Image (cartoon, rainbow, N blue to C red; front, side, top):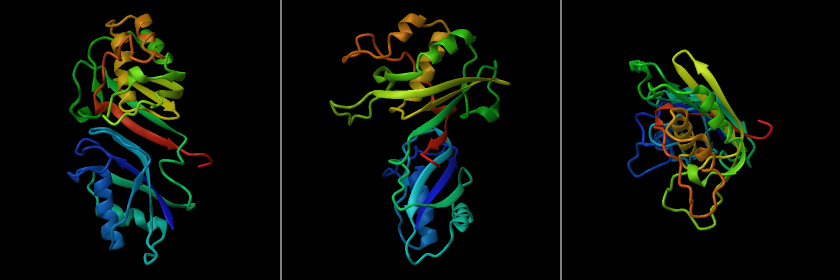
Amino acid sequence: MRLKLTIAYDGRPYNGWQSQACGNTVQDIVQVALAEVAKQPLRLHGSGRTDTGVHALAQIAHFDAPEGVSMNPFNWVPALNCKLPATIRIMACEEVPADFHSRFSAIGKIYHYDLCTDPVLPPLKAGLAWHVPRQLDVDVLWDALALFIGRHDFHAFAAYRGNETPDIDWCRTIESVELTTLQDGYQISYKGDGFLYKMVRLLTGGAVHAAQGRIRLDDFADLLDQPAGLPRGKSPLCAPADGLFLEKVLYPDM
């Protein structure tokens, strides 16, 4: 039986999602809980990486329950949660077809990024929003964000992991970008078919840079769809991990 987990976590205590030798990642910690419940090691497959400090409301992962474990999907939720720290929670568990894959079956993702523009960052927002007390021109912020909609070469809005190949595809499609006013700032939501390494943080940082008057909107627009070599440079600012949330992973007919 293949089981799909919906996992929420506060990213602050962890070295991201992806398993590492240090063992302090969300994937590693959930795999330890799975092994304790199943009484044997199990491999957990995630929909994609989130970096150190990035949060998730609905990260998706799957695993194959061993034949000797007859527990129904519903009961996996409390069984795992009682073995996990309070900053990681299994929100749901359901049976899926044997050919479902949390990563390769996904057709898109939704991320959102929270900005706090209050003069003082409330202590309960620390690590959960980017504090931007300097005044923003909201019209320019929206104009900058609107540039991202559609299919573009986002090479200038991607960081390097160090394992890039010469034939890497830097193109992605952003279906929609929404800017919502919050009581203490703004929330930016991105819906797309995929995102490059640190892409959402570089999109957000660059747009905020433009809204603060630190880069002309025309020059900012020129960063998209550049030829090889990036003659016009890269995004001028990478937003911190603090305000970034993986909101939803999209699947066909699910």
